[in-house]
Amino acid sequence: MKLEYWFSSEYIFLELPMKDKINSYIYESIKAKESLLNLTSDIEKAGLLAAETVRSGKKILLCGNGGSAADAQHIAAELIVRFVSKNERKALPAISLTLDPSSITACGNDYGYEFIFSRALEALGNEGDLLIGISTSGKSQNVIRAIEKAREKNIKVLLLLGSGGGRMKGMGDIEILVENNTPARIQECHILIGHILCSIIEKKLFDFN
Image 1 (tube, rainbow, N blue to C red):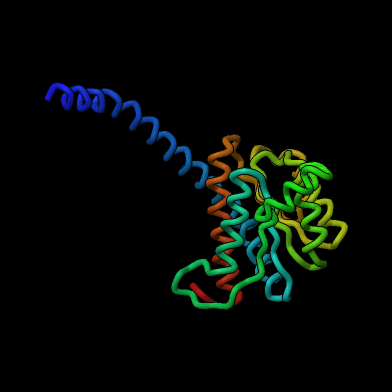
Image 2 (image 1 turned 180 degrees about the horizontal axis):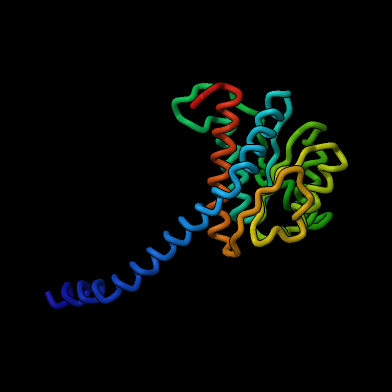
């Protein structure tokens, strides 16, 4: 009983400050997402561009690092499979450039890590495609190289950014800039934006709600 009481007391001792910390994360996330209400026009333009890209028989390519790499894969999966489970539709052409560890490590070893996405884009991208570059800092050199390669190949560029946009600000055809300096909050907003883009694509191409 003493042991159980000690654990119980310890739990009570830790509960309040940890609860405050959890609540602060939740409120920060809510506040960051509320800031997206100022970006609805940009998000709509991005969704319409993505929908028109697919409608015209072209594809969407995505890239990012770390959590943004996971976001690139997540968005690609929603397009290839489906966004809403009840929406039966054909698969849509989307490729995450973060998925091939053999090519990524070979390129990083032979040419340099900054070329991992531009090299893949050179191989897989075609005129009229859409590159979605995701970066919380706007400073990722490999994403910047991919944007430059996209320009060479007449591939449109949509950027999901944060922290003021960094070096990437001004490099995209459309840019959605989350005004926040915390990477985790920016990433939470980026995946919400990604979900909205998928919803717009399904609405415009298949008239799903």
